[in-house]
Length: 242
Image (spheres, rainbow, N blue to C red):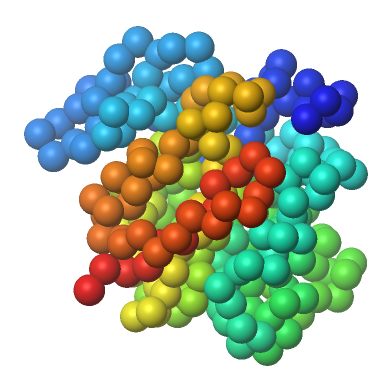
C-alpha cells in the first residue's frame, strides 16, 4: 500500500474502465437514478443511495499491470477461490489490460473467457495480446454502457474487479448480466472494502458489503458468500435468485 504507484493512484483516482460518466442530468419516472451536484471524484449520479464514481481511461493500464499488485491484492488467492471448473465460461467485465482475463484463461483450458470492454483502445490492446500470447480461449467483446453484450444463458461466472462502483448504469448492466448467466450462473465482485477506513483508497472507489448486497438483490441476485481472505478487497459471490 506504500508503493509509488499506489500513491499515484490515490492522486489521480485511476480505476479500471468499463463505463463512462453519466451524461444525463434529468431523471424520468422510470429512471432508477437520482442526480445531484457531483462531489469530488463523483459523477453526481446516485443509485440506491450511492454516488457513482468518476472513471479514468485506459491510459492508466500500467497501474493494472504493476509488479506489486499480487502482494497488495492477493491475486493468486482470488484466482484459487474462483467458483469455476476447467470447462467454465467466464466473462471478465471491464477487463482493462486483461490482467485477470489471461490468468483465468489458464484455469479454464476447456472453457472460455470473454474479455469485455467498451474502449476501442482496450479492445485493440487485448486483441494484440491474444495474438502475441497465442491464447485460443480468450475472446474480446465490445460492451456498451448498459450491456456487456454477452450471449444469453451462456456464462458460468461473470467477474468485475474494482469495476462495479464506476458503472454509469449499474442496474442495466446487472439485468443484462442476469440474462447472460446460465441457470446456476454466478457473479463475483471484487471491491475495496468501504467499511475499513485504513484502506487508503478514495471513498467513492470503495464499497461496503451491505451496499453491494442491496444493489444486487434489487436486480435478481441472491448473496452466496463474501470470502474474507483478500488483504483489501471484498470477494462477493452472488447467483441468480430462484
